[in-house]
Structures are given as C-alpha cells and as structure tokens.
Image (cartoon, rainbow, N blue to C red; front, side, top):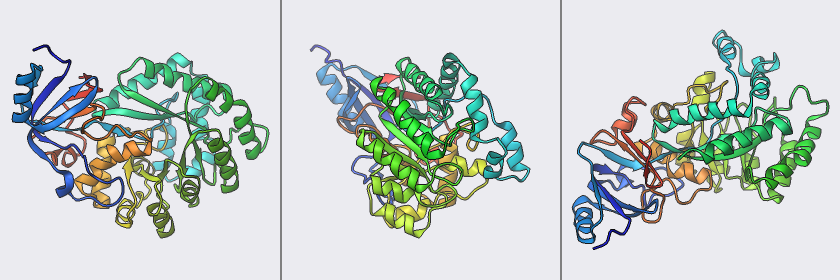
Length: 415
C-alpha cells in the first residue's frame, strides 16, 4: 500500500496531550490524562492520532506508514510557548544589575537614566543585521528548552524609524527559522527622553507616524503598552488602547507591575492578556477571574528585581487562567530560562505540575490567541517536546536542568 505521507512516533513512556483541560481555573495532576506507552501519528505538520503505542504500531503496519521508534525512556509533551519576551535589543544592562543588588530600585535606576532608556540608546545604534543576530542567538537558547513558539516585543526603539527596524528584524528572523515568532508592537514602553512633547503627544505621534506603516507592511497585529508611574497613566492608555482596538489590533498590557490599574484596563478593553501582575490585589484578581483575559506571570522579572511573584495561586483559585512567560529582557529579566522560572514560581506559589505545564503550553497559547498550539490532539500543530525521562514530574523537579532530547515543530524535527 502506498505511503500516505504520515509518520508514527513512539513508544513514549508517558504522553501528556493536555486535551480536555480548561483554560481557566486550578488543575490537579490527576486531570492530565497521561497515556502510558503511547505513540502518535503526524501528517502535514499536524497531529492526526494519539493513542496507545500498540494501536499506533498496528495502524502504521496496516497502512504502510513509517514508524520512528523511540528507543529510550521518554516523556512527550506539547512544545512550550514563551508568550512574553523582549529578545530584540542591543547591548547589556549589567550596570543596572549591579546598582539593583547594591540597593537601588528599578524606578530609581530608571530616573537616573538607566533602565529602558539605556537599552533604547544601544538598540538605536545597532543595525538591523546586528539585531537579527541577537534574536537568532536567543531563539536558539530558548529552542533548546523545548520552546517552539516565542512572542517578541519591540519597545527599545521609541521612534517610528527604530521601532520599525526592530519589527523588520523580528520578521526577517521569523522567515528564516523553523520556530514561530510572534511580534508585538511596544513603542509605548516609556516616553523617550529625546521626545520634545508630552506623553499624550508621543502617543499621537505613534498613532499617526508608526502604526499606519506597521499595518501597511503587515509587520504585526498586536500592540502593548506599559501602564506604570514611569511610563503611561490610565487616561493615556485608555485613549491609546481604544484607538488601536478600532484599527483591529489585538491588545496586551504590561499591567500591575508596581502599581495597579493596568489589569482593569485589560478587562475593559478585552485584551488577550495582562502581563506582570506582581502588584495585583484581591480586586484585580476577581476582575480577571470574571473575564476571559489571560493573566501572564513573569517570574523572571520578580527574580531579577527581587520583587514578589504575581499571585499565581490566588488567581487560579479564584477561577482565572494563568500563563507563565520568561520576560527575557536585558534589564529586569536577563536570565531567559523559562523552565527554571516556571519551576521556581511553582515552588513559591504552590502550583501543581499540571498548572505549571499548562502555563507554558495551551494557556500560553491562549495569551497569544493561538487555538491550534499547546496541546497534542487531532488537528493541532505537531509541536512536540520529548524529555529523556520516564516520569513527567522530573521536568520541573529538576528545575531547568533536564533538557529535551528532541523537538519537533509542525512535524519537522528541529533537533
């Protein structure tokens, strides 16, 4: 019988498909529906069957489908998704780090000319090619962790020209890598120090001189804003978000990092996600639980700044969702290791393995509006990470030291 183009893979000691799990609310490990001695079949970059390996083997033999044998203990999970990064940048902020551990706060350093503005100057000086090389290097690091989809923000250009350079760099790398890169416009990161007008005038400048070019050239359909004391206030953010929503952009917000208000805006405007949330209180938690907005915890920023973690346990117990992302950036979250960060957040916030895994798979996909990633079930993309262990709990128990041995993206082996 003629080969149909399908391929079977297995056996896996355990396969965690994540199917049937809800986007919101707490999860217990018993809900994972683990398939022992499992296999799957993929075709045209998608999963077409997940089952007991003997069933997969028999079907492959009957239909003359090639079968790739896994000859070691292995756990198969959906490839991970990092739903919030800033990995397009120039330079380093080691000086900021030294000041922070020396006792100065993030806001103090920003007011002294460090922080985001320091990276802006270095990113403006970098060529597009240099930015692309930096992205490629960081994407390679994330891929080794089993991450097959990465969101990347602009936000270190803070002029129409420099922000467009960043978005073009992201797009060019995306066109030449197997991994999916999702770009997000963040020119409303802070008001650049060399802008002569007010913060509201800067927003008008972005809306008039930046976003039309973004849309004309199809550079991104997502927009973000940093709602904070050193960035943009609530009225400014409202105007900005309302205008971009009218233009068809998907919205996300840097919210409740040092003060509250941003998450409420996210609910009001139906944002895909609100990210950070370290300062969120009971009011904000309840609002998010009553909405479809995805809260995104960024433990790397908490670790980098020595600040509290987002109230992950409270969010889940209230009925909200929870995604977990690395926030990899040169300032507040320079580590960039999502597995370490997710494991540490789970330990501090008492998250089940199921909740932690959901936070970097299908719930992270929901934060990006991706409905065919983050689970291993029929019709979903064959984005698959395989870890050399017979017990899925080892992935987070080892706190980032256990790395995947194999990664497939859309059914293609990456390594």
